[in-house]
Amino acid sequence: MPRTSIAFLALALFAVPARADQALDLGPRLFDGSAGAVASLPKFNFTPSRPPAQAEPKRSKQSGSDLFYFSPEEAAEGMKLFGSKPPAPAAGDFTFDDDVPADIQTQMRSDLAFVGGVSGDGATPLHQEIFGELSGAVYSAFFKSRVTAVGMSNCGSSNAVACVKPFFDPSKMWLTQNYIRFSHPQIARMMVVYHEARHTETSNSNWYHASCPSPFRDAEGNEIRSIWTGSSLAGEPACDSTPRGSYGSSTIMLKNIQLKCTSCTAKVRMDAGLYADDQFGRIIGEDARRQMIEDFKK
Amino acid sequence: MRRAAAAALALAWLAAACKVRPAPVPPAPVPAAGRLALLEDVLQAKNDNDPRLDSAFSALSEEEKIQFRAKYRAMPAESRNERGTVVYLLGQNLASADDWGFLREVAGEEPCLSLLACTKGGRAGPGDEVTLAYPALVALKRAEAALEAGESVAEARAVIAAAEAAGAPAAARLAERLQKRFP
Image 1 (cartoon, one colour):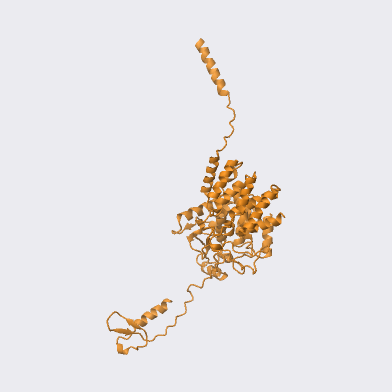
Image 2 (cartoon, rainbow over the protein chains, first blue to last red):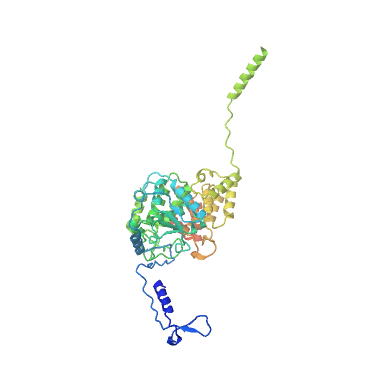
């Protein structure tokens, strides 16, 4: 209930006539604790006031079919609130909120150290454009120039691992307990973290997702479903129409690790390929897909 | 004089003895329990980029492979990465019918429905399809490598068929792609 309405109702209560004979016995009665004495209220037609313009806007309903979703309008709201600034040079380390459990902090730092230690033999053109060389230092700078703080949230789904809420703080990444709760290959956690890091870019409308086509089928004609929930993705805002969005950039990162990482174990390269091939399914639009396929050959 | 000569002789002998280089000692075979302990250590570290994954598990003996398979079966089904790591290491050491039989067994496992409890919860449980099918996917990647090399073709096809029949979505999709690629 808006505060102004509550305040008005409180004022109306104080305005009850002191004398019973002046009271209109039409409204609800108040029990004031004294025997026999009953105060009554005048009839009052309550009409809620309209919320002020600056009240919290309606948030995107999370369908539960996939992971956390924010709309183009919410991305625009983030831009309005926080400005369309490009990622700043990595000034320092990101911070964890006090409520981020120590084991999640340790795992995330360990995972980032893992990515921060990789090196490779060249990088594909799209990787060069988005990240730069395949190098741990480049990946670290990419992350630290975008994410300044990490907090805890449920990210709108019991299946979520991480999210960014651009309308709240576009430089903050939220993790869920799922980050360490389950047994994932290390590259899977990094895929999620770098996907979300891309969502911090207000200057690119936070790379909000495109709606998947309906029906949404793979090359074999099978319906593409969310790998997180098993739900149909047809019509859901869970795709990218560009190689440069969150799905595209994390796929490009993983594919480069699969193909060009020289400091990775064969297991890491295999894992990167498994998750990249799956993420590639979220890229819609023939041009974008063709561009990525060609990129991976270089 | 005699003493001096004897001392000189002793010194000469000692010097000659010091020049003798010991015969090269062959590396001691790693006891089976040693590699199992090493596996435990690698799994505990939770570092998929541990270089020991590439260097410390080659040429596993039959005894070691039996121990690794037992380790796999003893792990909770929800330990997807750990289980997949064991499959990965055994997949680097394929020699016998039993080795391929194990990959077939993994590929044909009942689908894991949820990372919370593989056998419960329906598909609404937490977990992405790739992680849920991870051990089977690792087995399939090994089968793919065999087919690319034109080796153990029948065994590799049996692994793919097992994954397709088991029906874990991500594994079934990869199996379908491999069936088309290697008709």
